[in-house]
Length: 196
Image 1 (cartoon, rainbow, N blue to C red):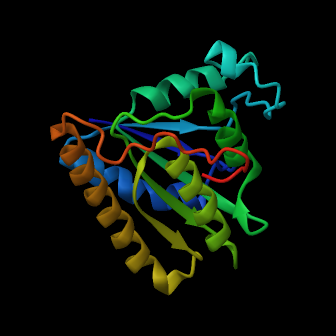
Image 2: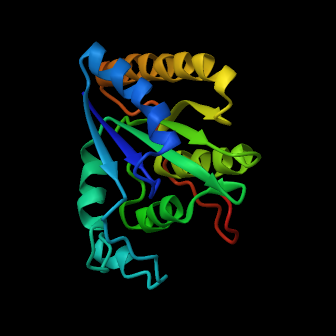
């Protein structure tokens, strides 16, 4: 079982990754192979909307995203760990989402989850962004943990993060027993509109 944790915080001591460690620890205790992919020191350019990926089946921009795309394809589960910037996921996270168009839909009985930390508001915007990412890629979303980094709330947040790891592990186990893609999203475009 391969779980990919995509950490989009540029900070060395990230509150979001401090939360994610509890999910990661639970997953590894249960026997999952967890890889942490941090955007720090990575070269991720924004999408330029060239649409070349529709013909090439990969992004033509030469940077570190090609490696991340391969990891996303190989993973059984994908966890986004993002701080909230201006009421949504941060720009580093959004670049990954935008550029994932080149490998859409990922499908393959994958499971997704998310972890967010914020100073105040913004969780609902981030949740919508990540839920849309999972939906378009045909990834089954097993949940999220959102925190405000309030000291007295941290024990509950840490337990919730561990519970999310266990839930993800069990969901991936279930997916691996299926000989079909029960939650895969296909034909997700409504022609003539930009809805799915």
